[in-house]
Length: 163
Ligand code: FES
Ligand code: FES
Image (cartoon, protein in one colour):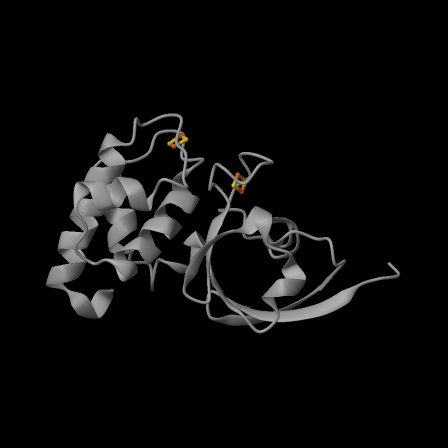
């Protein structure tokens, strides 16, 4: 390919380097070149948030980021949340509170909730609903997702070292 760029960044703590055209979207690089297929694609208009990843401490919709913009960044995807075989409190809470059905929105939803709880460790129900408003779910009606985030927030508050 004539116009490719080498781009280096950290993905879930590991250094990676990819060769991309300037137009390549981060979601495609993650899924197709780096085998991180947790982040999903649910739209072409930046609404659904299924593609949400964490980039340098912000929730970003990776369908709306060019991979060349990620040079030097620290990226976190749902694949990086579990540590040593132990689920992150949010993953455990989504399981316990039945915060997912088809699971398609779940990687983006949990990755967004991860950043939300860092922004606001003790959110109200309204804070949570507003905080995940960039993430659409067709299955759950959101109620159990809110419960899962509340449950994870309580657990993280009692064990701050695991946050
Ligand atoms: S795929 Fe829908 S917002 Fe990214
Ligand atoms: S669990 Fe199916 S879209 Fe959310």
